[in-house]
Length: 144
Image (tube, rainbow, N blue to C red; front, side, top):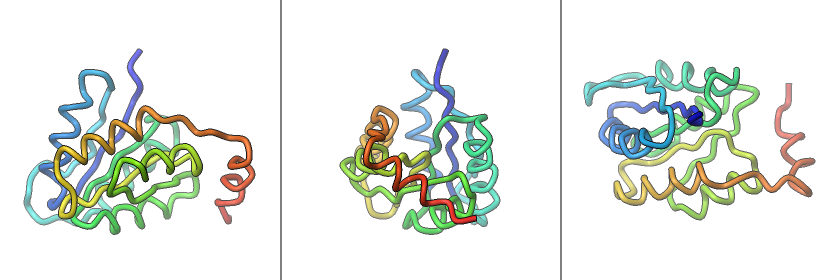
């Protein structure tokens, strides 16, 4: 059974979303929450449904992409059970999973290559949370 992954982007991240989605689709069941073109959109319209799907267990992990990675990350992190990390290099994705149990990542399409985006996604999806000393810290993240 394939692991389920949510993916979403705004217009600036659309092209990268398609590339990452196509790369992952052979090994994962990827649910695409949009956008579906380069037409200007409001990223929360796509991020909130993707984050909700991870929050409620419909998808195990999620990948978000916009121009800077910031808007989609901020939006996703409004969800109590989401820990979304901004990743601009593969090593950050590894640490986000190992130390923070990140269940979503955001990527900045305007600042990384398509190859790096794929590598970040690959590292994120292949790295496990270490638990141990990190678990107590992660347990303290949700405030309400």
